[in-house]
Image 1 (cartoon, rainbow, N blue to C red):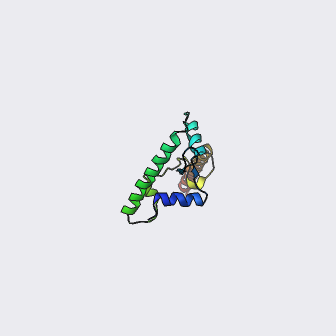
Image 2 (cartoon, helix red, strand yellow; image 1 turned 90 degrees about the vertical axis):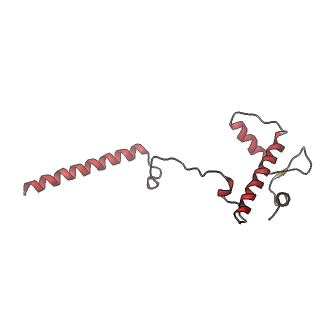
Image 3 (cartoon, rainbow, N blue to C red; image 1 turned 30 degrees about the horizontal axis):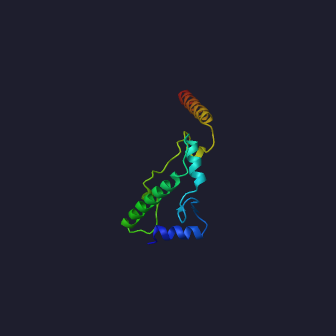
Length: 130
């Protein structure tokens, strides 16, 4: 199993991550701009010193996930090891009704029900005439 430091040095050679300009030799696992954007979108600010702490927290989290991978006798980190729940997009329409507005679907169901009711009434009338 590859250690995190080996991974970090490989990722730097392959163009991933970035070296923190304030600390020599410290590899950043995340893009600072993405972290900053996420924090600003939530309405907060971030100090430049906190990136190293965030980096250590991410590294620690990844190491914990890798322990779970090893416990499962696997070599691949998968969604089940992250502890994150899969998110589903709630929709009022079914998968076959891809981009159709729900008001139109309700209208169509009402028309369909009306037609079915009318067909039943007409069938009963015809059956009663015999």
